[in-house]
Amino acid sequence: MLSFRKAQIDDLQLYFNWVNDPIVREQSYNSDIIDFLNHSEWFEKSINDNSCLMLVFMNEENKAIGQLRIQKQNENESIIGISVDSNYRGNGYAQDMLVKGTNYFLLENPNFIINAFIKEKNVSSKQVFEKAKFKFKKMVNHENSNSFHYIKKLNGN
Image (cartoon, rainbow, N blue to C red; front, top):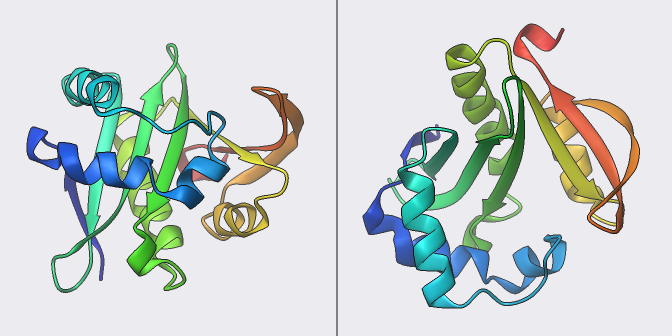
């Protein structure tokens, strides 16, 4: 059973390790390695930003296994990002993280739509988002990459 909590400043190094994981960089729209100074500034700003929800997920042994971030973009749209620690991939955690994290966000923000953009070649993420009840909207060019655009709303409407 996964649990989660809001990210805090003590998670800075953990997030830095996750963001620079080679597979995370490959699937990101910006595949460049992130330097620590830029990451530190971004992280501190983000955890103190009311329009950004950053959650750390823990497994049954209370080990941090991944993160989910939902950034509000305007009055009713947000965008989601997720990553699972390389030691815990392939265990079905991503779907549970998506369901729990998005339900938490949507209960607090019932009028919001959560947008997910997934690179066309990232078939495993596409399947996870579908299992987590995201609805396919259309193919788009997102940040110069052919991408699946999925959305999720409260009660799937």
